[in-house]
Amino acid sequence: MASTIPVDAYLLTLRVVTRRLVERTVQSGHTSQTRRERVEDTSETPPGFTPDAVRALIAMGNRVWTPAAITFQLRNTYPRSAQAPSNTAGLTDDDFRALASRDFAARDGISALFVRSFSGADGGGGAMEPLRSCILCALRGPSGELLSQLLGSILAHEFGHLLHLSHEPVTEASIGNLMRPGARPPEATNLTPAQITVAQGSALARRFRT
Ligand SMILES: [Zn+2]
Picture 1 (cartoon, rainbow, N blue to C red):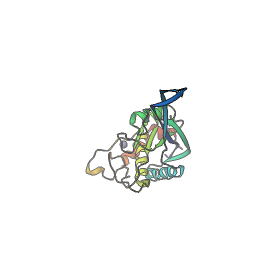
Picture 2 (picture 1 turned 120 degrees about the vertical axis):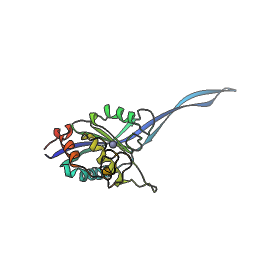
Picture 3 (picture 1 turned 90 degrees about the vertical axis):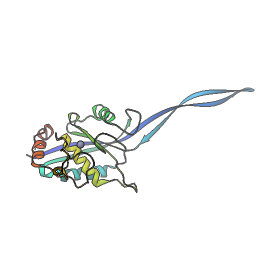
């Protein structure tokens, strides 16, 4: 009942274009004229993840999913540059959907997007099971360090959504569970037997059963 699921990781640098008008003074003979010109500025926001960091996060996700005998296998990391769908580097769920359904659509396996900033409903990450795609943003601590433990736990949680799991009710019983919604401590990575059964029966796990 083991499954090995390929993951293509896209490390996205997002381009945002701003247009502004500048005035230029043009000298012609003894007269000077003021002309307005349209100028485009492109700013680029790199993802804030290295391929090694991505590899480490997927390894953390795999430790969480060991009880279900499900392994996520990094097929490749792709540094890519993309126009931000809403022309802002802080991505929303809609932006994630746009990227995951066009240029970064899942091939045979999972498409995982790594970006600097994402503000979806699921905290620092998001997942869309029908698109077989998840997203993670580079959450950082006060001194700028990547919050690896937390990110590993969020990535494992998003993998859970791709394995057809929904959120657990917020009760005393779900403290420590991977699929509890909202802010969870990084060590909240438990899976119940029922969750393991759902994950193993998901379309993704069945497709990549080994
Ligand atoms: Zn969630």
